[in-house]
Image (cartoon, rainbow, N blue to C red; front, side):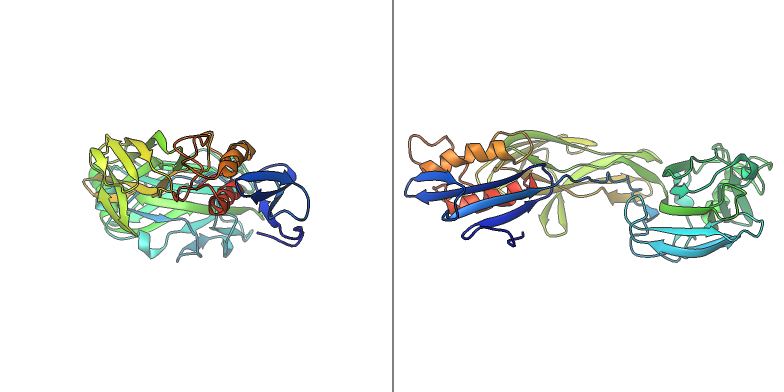
Length: 399
C-alpha cells in the first residue's frame, strides 16, 4: 500500500491487475453512505492499477524420485568435457532458478553432470522417467551424433539420442527408463540393452549426464532446469480456487510412470499436518464441506460456508510400489467479497457492497439475505467489513 499521493483522510491503494485509475471517496453518516471525490471524506480509495503477467508453473516429478529445480543454487551439479563458467541464475529458469554454462570453444562437445544426490541405487525407477528442461542458444545437425543423455552404472554406459532442439526456447525431454525407449549400450550405434543390463545400471547409478552443446558454434550457451529422475511423474498439479460460499469445485491431478498408481486426497488439519479426506462430510466449523471421490485423481467438493469461513488446504498423495509423495498443496477459499460470483473481486462487487454498507444492519428487511457483505459475521456491514473488502479488492480475489 502506498499513501504518498493520498488525499487528506483517504487511503491510497495500488492494485496491480486492472487497467484504470480512480478516486473513490465516501462518508458514512448513521445509516447512509454518500460517495464523493472531496478531501473531507472519511474513506477514500485511490486505485493506481497496472497490467501484470503471470508465469505458468511447470509440473514436478513426484517422489519417490530425485528432483532438482535449482531454486537456490547449483546444487552440486558440474560440467563435463568442453564446458565452462557453470553458474546459477536466480530468474533465468522455467521459472525461477536454473544453472547455465557456455562452450569453451576447444573443439569438443560438453554438458551437465548430475549431483551425487541423483546417484546410487535407483532400481525401483525401472519403468519410470528421466526428465529435464533446457534452453540453448545454438543448434545444428553437425553435432547431432552425440548423446543427449547418458546413464552410467554397473560397469555399463547407456546413451540416447534425441531430435535437435529449437533455439532460445524451453524444451522438455522425457525419456522412459526402459531398454525399449531408444537407449543404446556404450555408443549411439551400440546394441539395444537387455532388461538385465538396464536394471543393473539403475541398481548402481554412478553418473547421469545431459548434453549442453547442440552446435559447432564456438560460443554457444545452454541453461538447464527442473531435472527429475524417478518412478512416476505428475502430468498435472491441482489448482487452488476462490469460490462463492455455496459452490461446487473439482480438484484434479494425474501422474504417469510405474503402475499401478494410486491417489488419495488429504486436507490440512494443522500447519503441515494432513489427514485423509473422507468420502462425505469433512469436519468444518463454518458451514459444511462434502467430498466425493477422494480416492481418485479427481475429487469434487461441495461448499456451504457461513460468512467469514476460512479456506481449506488440500493435496493428493500419489503412490505406487516404490512409495508415495504428495502433489502441490492448494487452498480452496470461500470468497465472500466476490459478491457476484464471477471469480474476481472488482468494481461490480464494489457496487453491490455499497448498498449493504448503506443499510448497515443485517436484520434490516432491506438487507439482501443472508447478509453476504457481513464478512466478519458480526451482524452489521460496517467499516470492518469494508477493510476486509479492500484487501480482496486489492488482490482482485480472496486468495
